Image 1 (tube, helix red, strand yellow):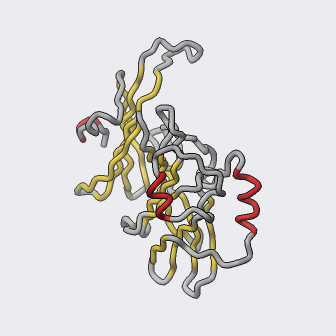
Image 2 (spheres, one colour; image 1 turned 120 degrees about the vertical axis):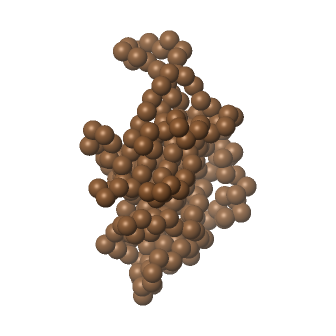
Image 3 (tube, one colour; image 1 turned 135 degrees about the vertical axis):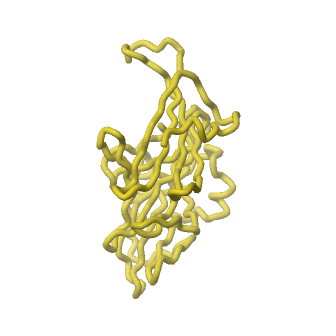
Amino acid sequence: MAAGNPEGDLRNAARAVRGPCVASAIAWLALAVPAVADTTVRIGCERVGLVLAPPVTPAIVDRDWGTGEPHKEPPARLILYGCSGNRLDQLILAAPLAKLNTQPIGNPLGPTLLVSADLSAGFGSYSGPLTLLVQIRHDHLAVIEAKDAGGHRSPIRLVAALKSAWQETQGPSGIKFLAVNSEPDFGADPSHWSGDFVTNYRTFYFSPAGWQVRTLSEPGIWEADRPFPPRSKFPG
């Protein structure tokens, strides 16, 4: 799934500050005045707040979401406040336009928040809103990683774009996230593309060993103007 990919370790996946935003981001992060959250979620006595950089407001986020309208403001921040109101931690998101789902999902490790940053560029097949799963762990905000069949861990990245989509589903074993994306199939020769595509179907699910991901790939192309693939296409 590609959409402005701020790849790297767990922190870098959420702390990508890009392009001309860097100088203004430094000033934004250095502000001594308390940040006022535009959206807040309570988890126990702690609070998680989404803070947008002025002049961005929730109304502007709704207006420009997914349109590719350029924004040069610093990236939004996700801030964790302790029970006494003190600031414990923050994550710098990947874009100025961001949304925080106010209904956490539950799993045995505690409530999980869905936070989205709009990486839409207004063109291309892979730019669009990116959603990450975030938990409070030991008074810190942690981006959730999933382990694949080979034992490799990487952040769960849910992208909505022309060739990518995802859905949350509830099953007997709990919440799962189904994600589909199509990408060029280079086969054995990455320097030459025949024009063929491969479509990847991923299932993210929680197990006693933590979050897992299973992937099934097949030739062909899927695009967002079609219905979301049936559940039978996804592994697990």
